[in-house]
Length: 384
Image 1 (cartoon, helix red, strand yellow):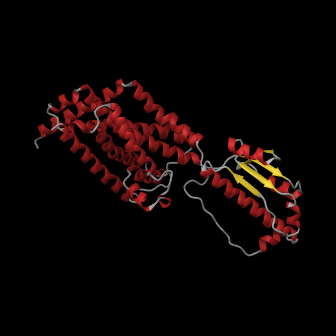
Image 2 (tube, rainbow, N blue to C red; image 1 turned 120 degrees about the horizontal axis):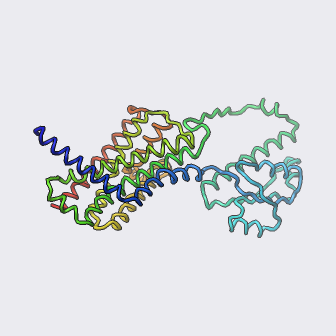
Image 3 (cartoon, rainbow, N blue to C red; image 1 turned 180 degrees about the horizontal axis):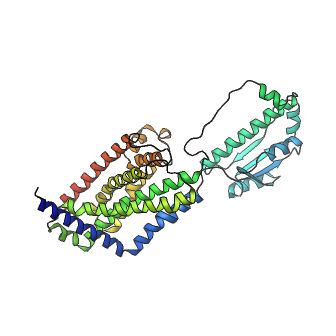
């Protein structure tokens, strides 16, 4: 191809790129929504959503009123539990569970302390509202640990053993090491996950909206009779929206996550933004596919939701692959967000490099090539 032809291709591309930026700049409502999503929405997700048990409201029914029962109740302390009040009637406790006033009902029967002192098994009841299964599971786990530890210490005390004697007993030394998020800060996981989810949503919606807008206004037919090829029409839209989304990711990182939540960046930012650009190209093909088979913006929006929902839920952010059925796990590997999550967390929190992430980068890029080729092929057929 002659150099003059390259110049003409470049000029057409630059003109189309400028056109896309101008069209996006005129849509102030969309720009405001993009700014909100990459700032306030991520901030709210990182600061307001927690996967840890905190201040679980606990009601106590103590029929024994012994030193042992009071000591056990006293171990249900902050930050996990919050003992709010005592109750006597079972119906009051059940009403509190039903209404959500209490999450945990702790009942100690009469004779609890006496049975412990005599070496007999002492029983207690712990009723937990597991409407939120994650928090309910954590409440049960912490409650079991507290009760088990209290039982061991009570039996040792009954036998006259001291803390030094307990330390001398044989046991398993469980040395735990917490990596990559040593303080187990939920805001790190929630903030990064929400940033990636927002990038996914706009990677599909923005190219779809840009193409459908051309179809609604009738300008796509004018473009098709111009010297531009179908690739020359679609590629500038993808590039323009990629620039906007990557800029939004940069705003989230440097104005929200790093300064407000102290999220570390242990890897290369250049690699992270390069992977983000590759991911936007990958998912933009899905938006072009939605726009190609849609006649108006409402149809494109509904189809985009149909595409986004399985992508988000099969990404592995909320449910790990090991917890999924085998058939669903295979579908998860078709979600580009699954690979982008591994890449983003690997770079930002683990400090992994390109060599460590070669496999997910290759797999994500392969999906992107297939999806973009499919979208371009459908666009050509529609206006052939």
